[in-house]
Length: 463
Image 1: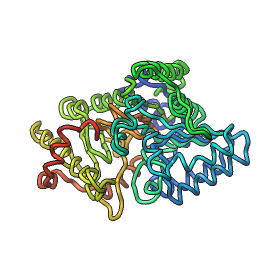
Image 2: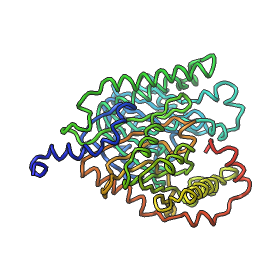
Image 3: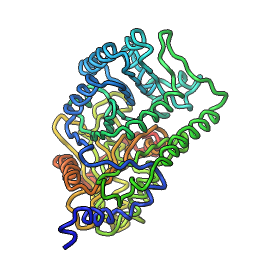
Image 4: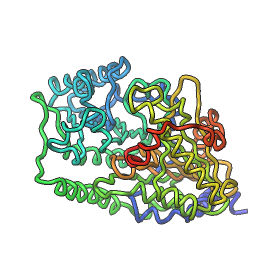
């Protein structure tokens, strides 16, 4: 009877179901919020409209981390309204962190689009382009354009306006604003926004800063020196925020119904929060639970695959892009073989599923939608007996070799006992699966060009 009368008792009972994941508190800081502070966007155009409105009306800060900013009409309109706001409000700060290789590709590029900010409001803006230390010095020019991007990228996707953080895997580019399906979860909380802004600032400190004359950058004697220093700075950032946590962030706090754990993955610098949490969630989910995974580019690391097939007790659903929904389909040159490469990797994984006799527990699906590409990634956790997810992983990481070992990634693990937010997460997940079909048999029948088979064998860690 008490559970029917006292809402707090019910909340504590439900939160107790999350005890499988108490280990998360030892990995990352936690921010306890209420479900009303979480906004789930499901449509790319609404993603653009949200950015446009937030950047148009921000009062204190706008901070962007993306692989690049595109050069289409929508991107230019977004930058135009942002600049108008910055020039109108002299206390508004504008920070941008992009990847150097991708952001300087071509004559018209992200860097050239941002020149007006550097020229007109230099005191209000901080425009930085990250370059992996593996390409410092002559290596940056030794490798051809596009191919040097394989070595490592700034891949975080964070869009911050005042106290709003929009986590996504989508780049700030025309395709991602129209018919490329991704995920977009907005969190309205000043502490969460501060954390991700500090993260952007730390990486920016070790990036090339755009100035009127070109770039300024920090010089390091060796790659080992910058790796060591960045590792120390990011670990200090994580530890500072962990030390701010108290009993109010516990799963058992009856005043809160949602918990956000920011996760960082920077394999280059031995920062592996996202990898540890993803591995932990796969390995600690109880029997009869369901984990639904999504990735635009299917290339599970050996560790993830082993955990799924040897340690995981949950039922598993894997959603990936059909070759027709892969952004590289039809690309010129070697890039055109990339969809075939991912199909081959998926086929090999399914062969392992069959060898392990897990076909009753593991399902593989492909997303295919007319004229759309698929770029969504993440995880949804459904406890035993629940028809809605109680947790999700959302952000830029793709569950693959690149995300774990080469690129800079930003994620968040979000847990909730709010029925409203659980229902919205389920709706988000279900909308993606509306365009999904089981593909294990079809994978077996696909042929792969010989050169693609050889490339996958030699360069799988670059996918």
